[in-house]
Image (cartoon, rainbow, N blue to C red; front, side):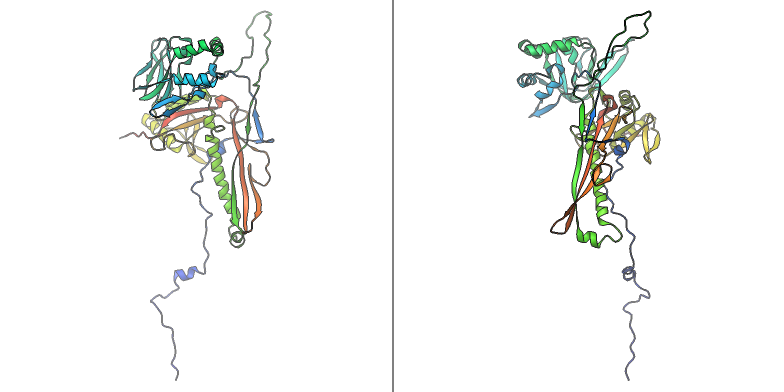
Length: 469
């Protein structure tokens, strides 16, 4: 008789194993996650202007341009030197020839200073122009009632005092070093020798001295009359415009996205592979866009701060006093502070130390610190000088909007194959390997309509902590 057969269990399990059951099940999937995606608050805070022609021209009233308040330097071995061409930032050296600038730059001598050292005394005749290479110093003067008044804090690249040095006049304030540092000193005798030798330089200096009381960046005045009695002759006037207004062209961020046809054909059942790849690439382009808007050497916001709109951190760490000083620069409808998250954290610590915690408000759907009602927007695109651990960073304050004469974002009004405003995705065809290529391009820029729409707090340190116990 044939023997009966029965299956013998291979183990003691009495139910179907999970691993085996999973072969008959589907999974719940997320879209691909990307660590590099940030809130991009700058792109959300800027009002965007649709540019029809690809060029945006900012027309302004004519202004007096008297030069910047920075001189760039470089290091030659152990010695710091002024870049000769940058001496054109001094108003009467704008048209000077290269040989004269090189000779003048070579006359600078390097000096060092310590914390607390007096660099210029109130009332003394100024015989040298000092350019701070590295370090911070404060300007103080005697107030109306004899009190000690803080006028300004100056830092890397700034110089003092051009006007009194050119005139060989008494310094109207005292300059004291806040940190150890290095400076470059130029004796006035060197300028006088060149002026005696070069008639064009002497004429430019005389024109500068004759323009007494004209502030850098001030607009040419409109002649008006008010409060008169009787029938006096009224002044006649007109509003003059800049001869060469600034024009902004579109910047771009661009890449070619490649997707194999077999991937898009076979694996797009529940997730469209091309759409997913395009979405992540668009995020990367927008991240680059925000970085360029801030840090581009020509068009970036940090590169377009007017001379009088730069503020130095008084103690290094950002304090409420520092942000208040920024608000005095952008006092007409300030919109947003923009800073690195570590700088915002450092500001929060200084507020806690002083017992004035900043108010939290909701903007763009997120709780954000505010100061005087102005939100502090975090952005990791704000760079550090010298490294994020021990270096310094900057805090930007801006007014936004075209009607407010502030900062506006620029983008094309219409782009072919547009998938988002100002962002196009163009099919470039399939190659012999079966790979489809898509050209992805983001067009953008930002314009500062009036100089006082932007101010910056510089040399901000973020590594200071306090014991609150």
